[in-house]
Length: 372
Ligand SMILES: Cc1cc2nc3c(=O)[nH]c(=O)nc-3n(C[C@H](O)[C@H](O)[C@H](O)COP(=O)(O)OP(=O)(O)OC[C@H]3O[C@@H](n4cnc5c(N)ncnc54)[C@H](O)[C@@H]3O)c2cc1C
Image (tube, rainbow, N blue to C red; front, top):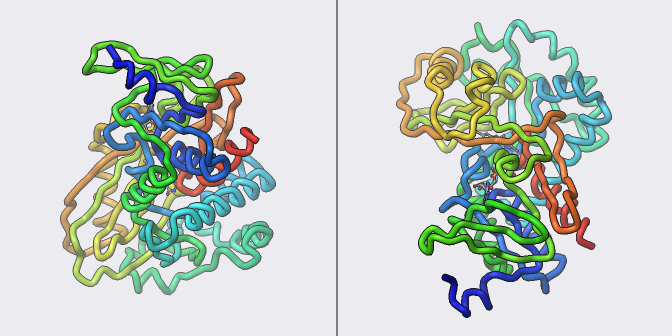
């Protein structure tokens, strides 16, 4: 049974946000910055945020050359350009809100590794640069083949490298810790271990396990930012989970590269973290198994990631894998971000589709705009 004090002081808010990933927290901060008088609660089911935001590889990117070409193929040029513009705006809003030095921002740039079967894509660099010049005002991609040897990659497997100076890396843990601290500094209340079970009419029901009873938080508006787990709460918008496997090596003597790297239309990615290497991806090897809410490992993919390190990225280099983890992303059918007004009291929002670090601060602004 809750006390009179608890009922009086802890249950009523102007806005409740479900999910304390980057989208939930950015939305809470954006609303509080615009409307300081609003009383905001964030409910998070995990002890820490438990989805994708603390589990990605720390890339600040808007799409590699091959990802953008794949997007153009599916969505067309206008839609692709608009998405890149939103990702780029989101990256800049994130840096403005938290500052570069508090998120471990390092602007070493990004590279796309092109293998022999795809080598003709380099003919499309100019075309994509022409399209993206509308956003960046400069050439975004350039061929950087001389770096293949300099970085120590296997030149039998990597025939071209495409460089972008606009991409950067962050320290994911520091970024999320800074965002949490900033939200608390603004006066946003965050309750962990609180899984929203039912949401309707501005009310959010949560199971209080210590009391063995359901308690209900009340607000004018509930904003659901549960990403991959959206359909465990609401039937729409339709979101499928997509698991990502990530590995990190120990420190490597004379590691030859710095930066973020994409391969195979972004399905694989790796970067340096100091003199260590973080590698992830490979979902496309086992799409069916990776469509999962379960944070467990997929040994087939882990073996493939190690194989990429041994044969393509670090040939002849000694290293050990010291840690591994998984994160769950959310994917919509059209791979676009979505803000859905469910009813007068409920909004569901997704920045997701594997690019939420870039997009979330932008989507948060759009959500806050709906409250004007
Ligand atoms: C391996 C990996 C690599 C990635 N690489 C990149 C990249 O290079 N660039 C990029 O921009 N993005 C990348 N992403 C994607 C990015 O991390 C996500 O798009 C982003 O973090 C999504 O943020 P979110 O807040 O929407 O979701 P999440 O971080 O998943 O947050 C959702 C939160 O909701 C909580 N929740 C769920 N259900 C409930 C409930 N019922 N009650 C209360 N709380 C609930 C969860 O516990 C979770 O904390 C990657 C992700 C992974 C896993």
